[in-house]
Amino acid sequence: AQSVSQHNHHVILSEAASLELGCNYSYGGTVNLFWYVQYPGQHLQLLLKYFSGDPLVKGIKGFEAEFIKSKFSFNLRKPSVQWSDTAEYFCAVESSNTGKLIFGQGTTLQVKP
Amino acid sequence: NAGVTQTPKFQVLKTGQSMTLQCAQDMNHEYMSWYRQDPGMGLRLIHYSVGAGITDQGEVPNGYNVSRSTTEDFPLRLLSAAPSQTSVYFCASTNSDRGDTQYFGPGTRLTVL
Image (tube, rainbow over all chains, first blue to last red; front, side):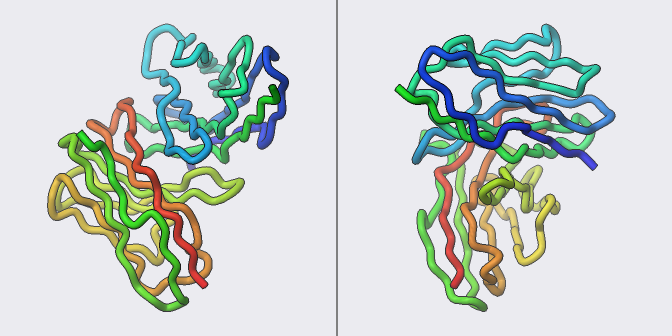
């Protein structure tokens, strides 16, 4: 069965620190990959997505993610976080066969000013 | 363009009561989904629809019913509420089921006593 695993459940960083959130999935077929973000009190919104082409994907607010097919990974990175990046981050995988979107457990990021 | 709207925002039920969570979108999206969000478990797919008159089960469909009589509306029914259904429910819509962005509603926070 398709599954998504996010390794870090709660991350605390100081402003200007670099960020990397891990995401691994298990599915043998072709997938589309997403990172969604949920800011406090708001609903989910798309941060970035990988559909095809360049495995290094750039999203909004300076975020990027790299799809490494051999490792079934889609880690999210940002070189320098800001206090406003405090949010919950969700990795999601969509099977090209079924179209179903499966989410990871989420990672809560707290950035200290 | 309101996007995806959900009502109510908050609801408290007693065990055994029934209710309907409303979801509507004005983007003419064919694909709509219901998720529940629980701490440490991310978002789990309850039911989804690929068009009016067509619905299918997701990861956690038990205790929930859906119907899709129009493109715009996708209500979620709890037939006999249980405390295990205490959660935050998100409705989402997308233009296609292959690599397209999902647009989420603001959520409904449901408590079952």
